[in-house]
Amino acid sequence: MVAIDKEKISPICPHCEQKIDRVIMVNRGAFSIYQVFCCPKCEKVLGVGGAA
Image 1 (cartoon, one colour):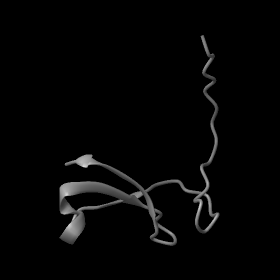
Image 2: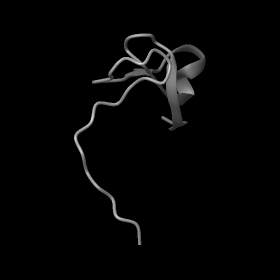
Image 3: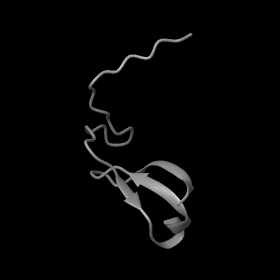
Image 4: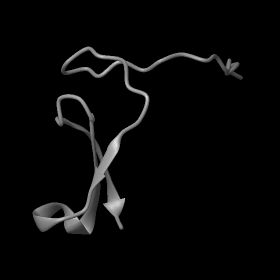
């Protein structure tokens, strides 16, 4: 079994390398059927979720 440690870290955007304290969920246009999460600083896509 693998141990999972909980630590307080500040994630970093893989695009602009700024610390992320929140993300933006885009839900308009072509993205309205998926959950699309973006960096609030550079606005690049961080991830996509299933249907909303």
